[in-house]
Image 1 (cartoon, rainbow, N blue to C red):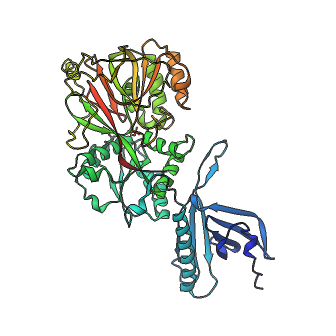
Image 2: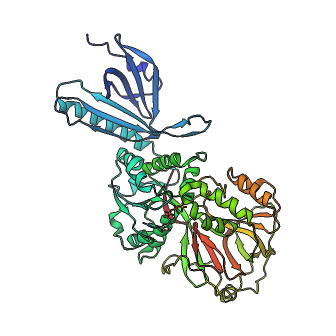
Image 3: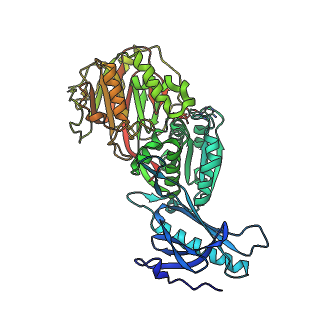
Length: 530
Ligand SMILES: Nc1ncnc2c1ncn2[C@@H]1O[C@H](COP(=O)(O)OP(=O)(O)OP(=O)(O)O)[C@@H](O)[C@H]1O
């Protein structure tokens, strides 16, 4: 007996129903669902057999959480039905935890209303198209633009570093990443990097008219190559506007964690971070991102999107590379090891305060310079023990650094020079996370034009330093009242280490050691964000 039709108003009483249908479950032809689409939701309710009454468990999926929908037929000639699948990644409560994270939910229905397979497929197409259309209308648009609006069709150059993190980046691509891109209908071409600087060369030489976005599955190191590769091009001004995306596959994944943080999510584990960043990528909202231009003592210039570190943090970053196989925990292990041999780093630190610099830190430490007598080049020439761990190709292009004084001159009068010369660390950040689980600059945003400068003066005890790092997991370290920690919002800085040897890291990678100057360039790059 043909079941009685259910009144659609019973399914969705408050909003207008755009499409309504009764379909079989794709994996069980005995189970039937009543499905209705509104401008904002897809509602699914089970029909109980044998009498066609609605079951109690009605599920409503918000189209904001949807990455795509597709229609298809199975290869089976006997099956005249067609199917449509809808892919959602809603925020759900985590197993055995109070937190939430994005989790995949697929809804798949079989349409077998008539014997004609083509008619069934047309009906399935109609549903998939209607869902995609509504999903597109609900895309976030805050202050960015949608990738799909920038160019069409959207094609992605996907760069994977198979060696990053625990060496699992390729497996991540073959698993959840490829599946999600397929669900969202994002066409892409995979490039597996074969060596250091391979991605940099590929990006430097690429015909960028072929690519609508450059996305990496790796740690921050590969994105560093991509950013610098773009700025080494003659057409850098257009090239740096190519939307960039990041899917975490490394051990630190600081930028991926920052982008997840900006989307409003709490700190999450590596797998959950991948799903969150994949979701953000599929949604394709493109925003501006600050880049910082860093000048090294030898005159080389490079571009950084994340951080510049000296002292304790730089040492941990580089020394913990040998614990890469433990993933994000490498920094915890590295911090504990370094704490045991805590030391002081001597040098001079100067900076140009941001106009809006508030007294947010533990203490106001710096004095105006009136033009210091210490020059960048002076210090450079006394540092002949250059550490050339990472050979930089000189970056010939990019915007002028109008805020930076000449390398062989003093800092200008509106700069401040920190009176102390003994430090435990200096950390300049332009995005919020220092690692997946470290919220180093909680007030940072993608496009702020601000360097969040933190330094810890010598004299801090091991216990207090450990407490600061523990507080950083929640981003509360600036509010601990630690008298040794100073926080400033700045636009440019100069660091002149006194020792001939040591470690400075840019975006987590060691660079030539010696004096450095840096200036932030607001919104220079484009990033796919949530
Ligand atoms: N095929 C490759 N073999 C060896 N090194 C590579 C290869 N491809 C890229 N690299 C280099 O590996 C370095 C580390 O990569 P990446 O930063 O992506 O991973 P990670 O260090 O594990 O992650 P994170 O930076 O988040 O800690 C980068 O400097 C990159 O240039």
